[in-house]
Structures are given as structure tokens and as C-alpha cells.
Amino acid sequence: MADITKDQIKCIKTLVRKLNIEDEDALVRGYSNMRTDHVSEMNGSEGAAMIKHLKSTDPAEVSAQQMRRKILAMAYNRAGLPRDANKKQKERVQDWVNGWCKQYGYKHKAMNSYTLEELPMLVSQFQNVRDSLIINI
Image (cartoon, rainbow, N blue to C red):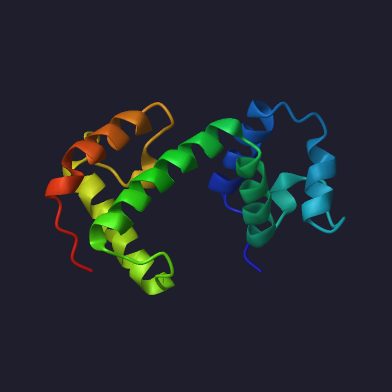
């Protein structure tokens, strides 16, 4: 298995500090099946699982995800996707939204790169132009 990356280690350390987790070692042991208690000794998939869990408990990340889902819901609706649309159709709309954010979004970056503080403006911008958008998938 691939080793944990420096970016993953940095992300874990940042989230642990932000969420005020006092026993990081115990958390690492849990995600590494008791193999290690050091983040740097985890493998990439263990690190990814731990990051996913930590982000799901971060209130700021939850709020950011809600705003991202709002943009995607507007785009799905505008593209005429039914609620039971398949994964491939949804991915095409997500790719279209990312392209739109990079080209027309006020920060010109991918949607997932917008911070919690930047997302409300992006949501407003998308709402203002959604009726004029033609989304071909």
C-alpha cells in the first residue's frame, strides 16, 4: 500500500488541532487497526479514511458541503436531470459546474477549492445566472 502523503499528514494535523482532539494517537491506532499511533506511519488509505471522518465532524466543512450541494442541485435542475439520474449523468453536471466555477466564478477556481467564507458569494453568483445557463450533458 502507498504511504501517507505529506499533504494528508498536514490535513490530519490541521483538523485534529481545529477540532481540539486531545488523543490523536488513539484515533490513529483506530484507523490503522492498532498497527501504529503515529500519523506519519499510516498508509494512504488509512489517512484518507481518517481525513474523511474528521471532515465529517467539522461544522465548517458540513456547512461548506451544504452550499456546494445547493449549487449542484440548481445545476441538476437546470440540466433537467431526474432525481434518479445515474452517477455518470451527475458526474457530467459536476464537471460542467467545476468548469463554470473556474471560468466564471468570482475566484476562478474549482468549486471544492472555495472556502466556507467564499462559498456564499459563489452560491449567490450561481443563483443570479442559473436561469440563463444552458447545461448540455
